[in-house]
Amino acid sequence: MTLPFLLEKEFKQIARNPTMVGIFIFFTLLVVGVFPWAVNFELKNVAVTVICEDTGTEARELIQKVQASPTFTISGLHRTYPPALGDINAGRASLILHIPVDFSSRLTTERHADVMLLANSVDASQASLAQGYLQELILQYADDIRTQKLGYSAKDLSPIDVVPAYRFNTEMDYKNYMLPAFVVMLLTMFCGIFTAMSIVSEREAGTLQQINVTPIKSFTYILSKVIPFWIIGLLVLAFSVLFIRLVYGLSVAGPIWLLFLVSFAFIIAMTLFGVFLSNLAETLQQAMFLILFFILILFLVSGLFTPVTNMPAWAQVIAYINPLTYFIHSIRLIYLRGAGFADVATDFYVLVGFELLLGLLAWLTYKKRY
Image (cartoon, rainbow, N blue to C red; front, side, top):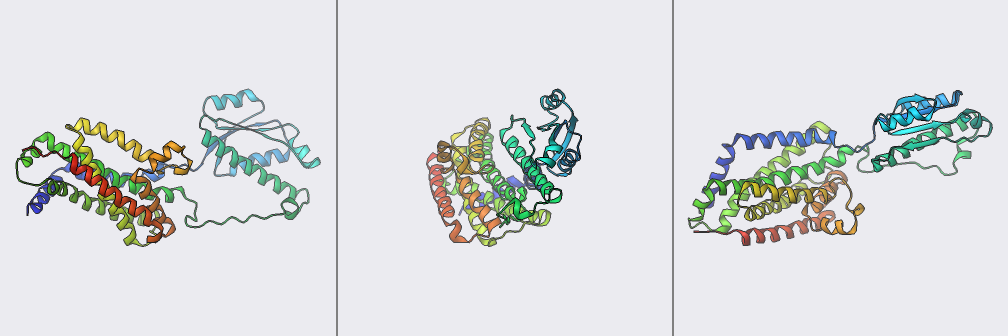
């Protein structure tokens, strides 16, 4: 049996490479320790510049309510449009709140008043969300005015009471949604990309040519290259789960064995994908170009940051032939919803199908030259 000796060689190569060991440790800590705080789509501290032409109490109270909100900060207070537009053009503000001169008087006498919101829509998604949040805040203030100063009851304002409730991610914390996806990113990097780079580096160093002149079978060699990264992937997964539990307080809601089972299926698929990529490249430079090409597709068209259902039809087709799509879906279900095997069975079997397909491609494209 030559496999144990090949595995010994692989582990010794990894252990003797301090750069690779350092990357394993540093990159894992970076992804699960820093990325969740940096990659955050929650709206906080949105700068609002105010044009206030009214000197009444109600106008001042509205400005104070906006300032007290954790979502908004007042970046400027003006009487006319030109300086407020200057704040928008200079990037000092994302929204303009215009309170007209008759706001307080109309609110108290006519029980109705208008304000205008002007949003910087370069980032259309953020502009729409920020405008919606500010509009909701203003409507809440209007309800307070009607009940506290105008004598309306809560039933007069709204015949239907909406009581919000949240399941699974009850804190509505975006980090909890992204943390399982960052684990997927780690496993993709370590098990897919590093496998490809390891094989191509051996080819450039001449070690692979020496192995090719031996009677070692292609299957045995491929197995010796992927098994170490299977173990590394499982260790990275275990460390990430523990780190997320200790630092963020987020535990796996579903069975831990199911998380490792589905993750192991993905790890196998990614290592075989790495072997396939390495077979297409003769040099490390070629491998890097291939990796860059595929990694952008794998990450961006997978539901990592945005739901697959929000994508156009042609992008959804790409997403559904992307193994990351199925793993991200299943790991979020297990982590946040407490899903059982029946809930992720389709994703698991699809990942097993990717294993078979990528294993076949890796074997067929591996050219053993004597």
